[in-house]
Image (cartoon, one colour):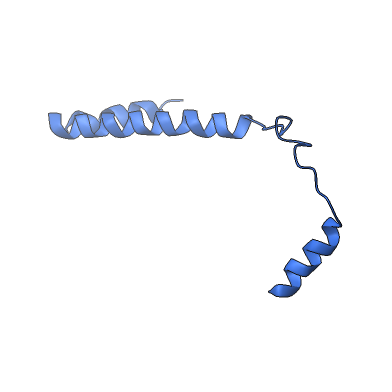
Amino acid sequence: MKGVIMLSEQVKRAIEDLSDNKKREALNFINYLRWQQKHTEKRQSAEYDFADIAGKVAWRGDAVAVQREMRDEW
């Protein structure tokens, strides 16, 4: 596609004229974005199964009655 500049090329051209300090700043920001993307993808893909805590509480009494009592206090 002649005349259409790829996004990566636009980024490359945008930082060419920056000072070295600003280039370092841009690189730091890019590294932050990469870190953020990696951790966001991890968080979205990880599904916690709660198997390690399921069934651990043994409730004595009427749980529904206690819930109603707590709700009515508000």
